[in-house]
Length: 52
Image 1 (cartoon, rainbow, N blue to C red):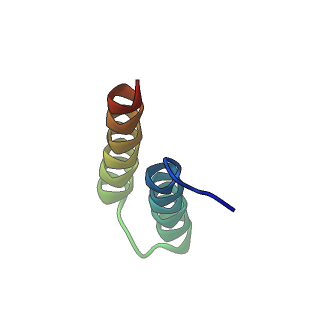
Image 2 (image 1 turned 90 degrees about the vertical axis):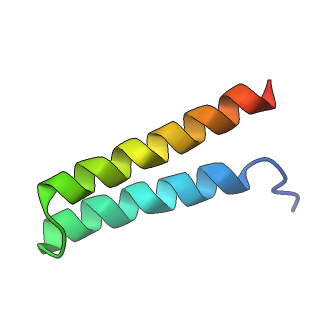
C-alpha cells in the first residue's frame, strides 16, 4: 500500500480525533480543542495547496 502524499492527511485526522476525544473525555479545554482542530485543518490545507 502506497500512502505517499496521504501521510499529512492521516496525521491531520488523527489530531482532530485527539482533540474531539480529549474534549469529550474532559482532558482538554474547548480552547485547546478548537486550536488543535484549526491547526490540523491548516496543515491539511497547506499540504493540499503545495500538492497542486
